Length: 562
Image (cartoon, rainbow, N blue to C red; front, top):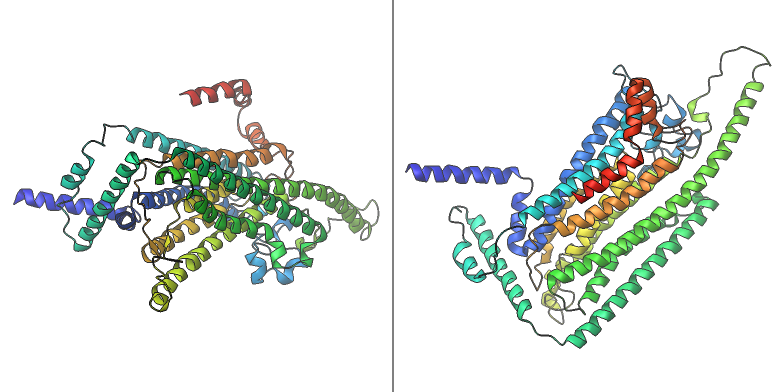
């Protein structure tokens, strides 16, 4: 009896541990019906959610909350006030949905933050905190991705598990501690799916094929994929050139589509091109796991080309804003001179004139513009994903389910049939959305919060869609024992996302009248300013020697080697 009681207690404890892991039961249920390959996506989604919770905690706790509680309030400075010309529409839904108006002049974006060295009674160093949080989020992301890859690589070690594969599955798969009928059903479905996976693996290892026909079809498939990528790149380039033309002529003269054309075209390409790649991959006759990696590689190239075309367009827009800033500076000098000359005589020592912050001319603030573009792109991509699930999965499943009885052919096994879960498209969508978060969060501190909300809702919506609207793949296959292939792509995107952010921080001067680094030649000067005012002189010299490229580069090479 004591032994039985200990077993029951251990079973309850294991169930309690499982219940404490977010969405663990949902993922187990999906794995039991759809296999480990689909479950690996949701495990990856949960891991990404944890990373973004940390990023959200850093930006919210060390940047947004201190500025909101201890910084100067709204309306105290021009950078914290909606211009007079925009006040009438600042609270319109269309304006707020475009992240303009009051949303633009809030803690959500870079331009709202003041350049005071310290704020509040705590003497909180806002510019330094803003810079260190931006750098720290990138450093933490690198550390956690590399650490996860190393842990997964260690877990892959072990003996040969391919000998007597079916015998092991037959005699050791059942869990005799299961006492819940629903859990038993899920376990039965999981064992059945694992047998299907093993049968596919065995069939693929023994399959004979016409090598010449296979090579021809694979060359043809790669040619079609390259044509699709080239067409997508040209379309993005064409749309970006059109958007620059619209910006020069004034976006207020155009409609909603023209203002959001770049974001919508990128979202539509990300929605339809993976489906086209999936059709092309059917020519190649690869093993399902290898076919998934080819599919991921092609969608990776598509998203990467789209993202960097978008970045190049933003760089052109930044250059236009910098030229506009020079004109605004000159006009502000004339405005100030005319203001004083028109109200007080020469050589007067009268106090400075009080002007409402809403009436003060201001520069274009290219940093806020960059943050707005990334926020809009993230939101439009999220909406496209949700609409795709509702139309492409739910309405399609409803049509097949209820019209199958009165149609000319079998809708369930013919066209359109129930949809399968698109692993490659969803994985790449997660990875590139995260790349946009890393790239844009320095200029829009609200981006990690938006991404946390997106991932949280995506977990529930996609779990529901998979179980209610999708069917298992015809060829169920076993996922690799770790997610290192996903992690390798995520690490590559992290590196590529860091480059534009580092370039703007190091090479482009900050705006003169907005943001925590206004008045400085470069953003990183906040570090030297802090060392000069808050640390002894010897510490500044040591830091200068330690930050010498001659020491940093060998250290980086040593870390890579290790």
